[in-house]
Image 1 (tube, helix red, strand yellow):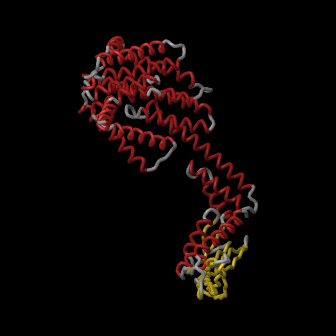
Image 2 (cartoon, helix red, strand yellow):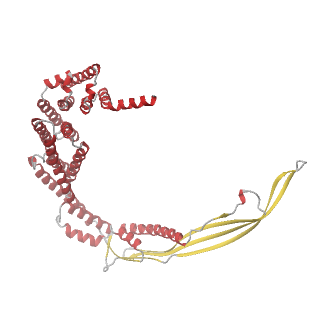
Image 3 (cartoon, one colour):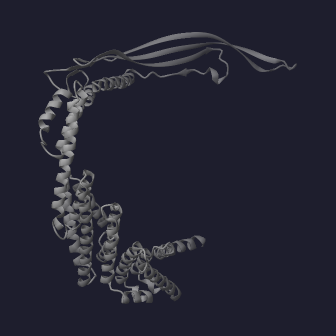
Length: 522
């Protein structure tokens, strides 16, 4: 019986979970979620309302009354942040309430919907948001906070989307994932990424936009006027946000330094993306993005060019400084192709700064390691060689040896006592034979880097040893675990070779790293 009651209790809790969560949201002051979850509880399961007791209905209505009273006071607050939050959250509550079949069953909700107009709430939300944004969007303002303010309006758009998706049974998680994908692509584009793969993703997200709109129009239970109204709200939010991004971009562009130009570049691009569904190149946002990006690219190219020239002039006989100059000239070309005379200077600094080496080796893995390490400071040639690099290792050699040692042992053990209480001693005479087997693996190698600038030769044996002991007892052996035979196993040629090669690899790699480090200092 207790088990049955427990199951019934669990089922009751599950069915009431949204109402329970709504109460918790109310207690912590999350009034928007309280309203959302309350109506979700009724809309998803109509019998929940039919079974609702009058006392519980009154309790819910009282909470709604308290919520609307709270927002009435918040709308009249002297703090603009409070007023902005109040207007945005009231919009969200109105959207949810207006689209629930049960909102008008509560007097407080009926009064709220009857005494307010969704367009007025929306316009007031944008107005206070713009006022708050303006306080932080000036030259000395906190632009990160300004963006946070203006993006707060996305909460209104999300509420619209959730209602429309709920009415069309569209997959909410897929829609969120799709929106996040759009944001990621926009971020890459804003930073100047022209990867071809992004075009495929952009086409996909564009098709998703169109498919979503078609699905909403085909399946929605909302009337057509409400659909158009919501679409207009979404367009106005996009316009409001795009205008904000453009305003910030202009302020940052005027600062002049490249740090601000890169920020302006990103902001212009984001503005273009935000409103791209409604208009291409909104208020020249994309054109401005390209212009600002070009300015910033020129600045970065010039900055790297100057650093390269400085390293080049001070290089003297230092190959390292010529390589540093080469790096800066190549960086300049990443921003502006063929900037000034960087192509000529890249060739000159490569000739003077990079080691021309030739490698001979009988080990492909070691060859790969050498080429990888040398790639940042040199390149392989057949003529005009400055560094000859040679590596070779001999065949693996495996040897075993053994040594046998014999010991004669004597052990006295008390086996009892006689009638006089005197110990009875037994003497054990036995032999301990220890056979020691040693496996030895050896590979001899030669590593050399020699030439005009550097000479270093290493000729060494890499040796791996494995020792095994076998112990055998014979004769009159004492009855003790201390005198049990033990037999170790050898690894064998194959395993010893593997371990010798591993030891060789580590030693040779260390020596290669050390030699290349020496070359880098030249």
